[in-house]
Length: 301
Image (cartoon, rainbow, N blue to C red; front, side, top):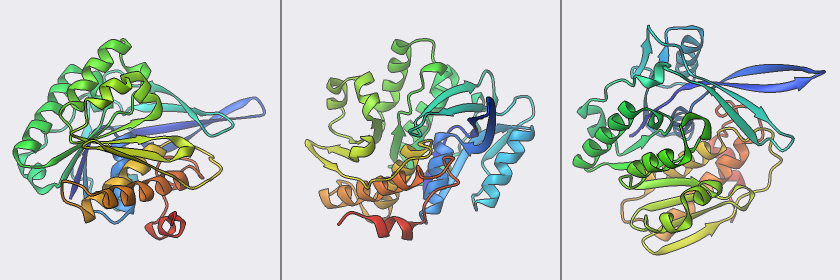
């Protein structure tokens, strides 16, 4: 079982027509996107997060149920609203974010019991919570307990400039998690932010780096390899990295034990690359997730 912990929110995806901007509501939040993709790819997955007792929160819980997700661990906070992320797309489908997130529900994450952690093989930690000191302590406690139970911890950077006071404090906080996780994921831009020299210090971990149209790269115990992807015309890149991460984790969880072989890593990234690419051909992070059968048809031989 894979356990995903972190933000669940509504992506409000904007589009301008005839001088009027309209917003389409989509389920989102990186760890929830990953959990949904893992479910789509046939994995046993649990998700822990918080929404408000409001219109958006009820929509998200209903959406999760309709998707086949277990909603037992999604807390509904009666005192806080659900986080919103306003998303604008350029002509290439690349997105810009603006978060409506001040004292919203995901500042108060639900407790995660030992039994839930013990039942997991991989524990995936979300990054948006790291903007709050109490949630940083919450994440560190989960990581410590996961390792005490012999579990693998995965972390996707998902760096967002508008939720931290400044770049320096953000990087310092992120490194607290990156240094403790076993599997970490960066985008190519995030490697520049954290620097290649720092990424090199993570050589004992499995480091995954997404490279957009060029595919992705893995680094592991002094070895590395780039894995190509397929060519698509993107409509919306929201959630592409989450679909990639879920795809890669699904292969690792089903087929591998540590230490990982090069064959497993290449298979994981091939699957993740195609999952992420196909996910960009429609709008929203979850609604356009491909079926495993569709991914397998496109795998590069």
